[in-house]
Amino acid sequence: MFDSFGRDLKYLRVSVTDRCNLRCVYCMPAEGVKLLRHEDILSFEQIAEVVRVASRLGFAKVRLTGGEPLARKGLPELVSMLHALPDVKIVAMTTNGTLLAPLAADLKGRGLASVNVSLDTLDAARYAMLTRGGKLEDALSGIDAALAAGLPVKLNVVAMEDSTEEEFAALRAYARRVGADFQFIARYSLRDEKMDGGEYDRPPACGNCDRLRLLANGRLRPCLHGNIEVPVDFSDIEGSIAKAARLKPARGHTCDDLEVGQIGG
Image 1 (spheres, rainbow, N blue to C red):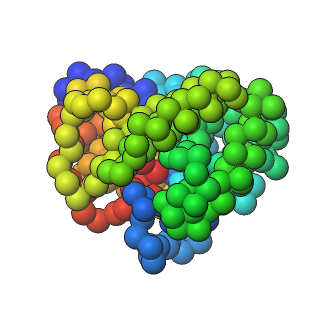
Image 2: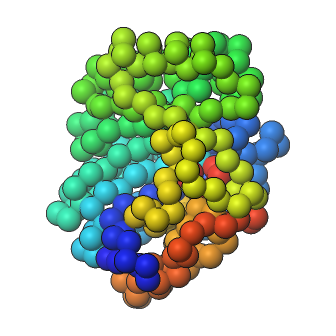
């Protein structure tokens, strides 16, 4: 499916929950966010139906996000449902990794293709500060379990204002040692206008963006850096997706109604 600017949209990011067990400083405020009611969150069956229609329109890659996707009970079952769809080629996930260890092998067995794990430092005290209480050992255990299960792992490293080259070097060395890939992500605020360029791997340049986002409440977001959204009409899912594609802007501007953690990054 192409948008109004000729970009081939083929990547659907699916936020399965707005809940998270951490409070990362670049993702949400310390007090958290106002959470959706359980009855307002899409069921696995509804998510699978949207993905089924989207995949027939060319969205071959699906990434599960949150909040923290593994905070949603029964997530491996959703992976099975999406993996079974004939037009879905890749089911991936982005996670903070702290809940991953006991589920990694099951996720791999159900068809998860790869996992991105947020890891901004190897210093336990700094990790606890950046995540507002997270334990580094839990994230590292999740990475170990994923690799042991045969899941390709990519580390998402957010470059903070006070990050150091020594910190980055330690993360690069760790990635090489365990056999993980990694990417640098520029810290950004949705309240500030989207900027392209720079020395980082992400966010991607607007001209290359091939994404739509399905939020946990059943709304499609054409752009991370914007307030535009299209509620999914379950009597015309294809029409809802087509409308979101038409509304995708040439470039992102600002989003002032949600936090990064509520959209799934």
